[in-house]
Length: 116
Image 1 (tube, one colour):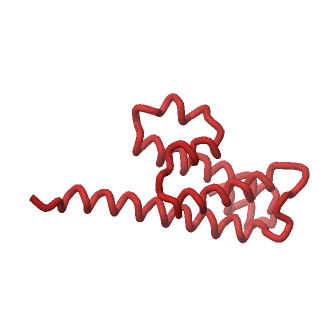
Image 2: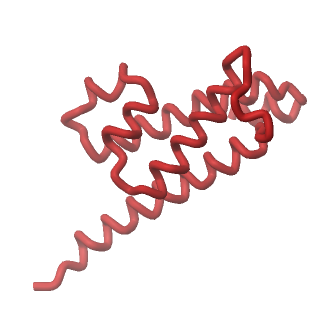
């Protein structure tokens, strides 16, 4: 919410930082939901390590990692991805959300509709 507010006020640098923080919460909350016994390891760990250690879906992992790369560009002095901007970060976060939703829904229906 704060990220979109900052963006609407054309505070793109602040918005990028906020979107990066929101991404971290999203990924870590998702990983804790699938591995609750690892919560104390997930919370303090670097986001890229959490993704690489706990996300198994390759599409989700690839989109999330790229979102982290662009999100990190929003917080560092030198940009590594100069041809990508806040718009790309938001698209990658949107893709990450879609893959998380797909993963959750797939698991739900596979568990509910097992063949006997």
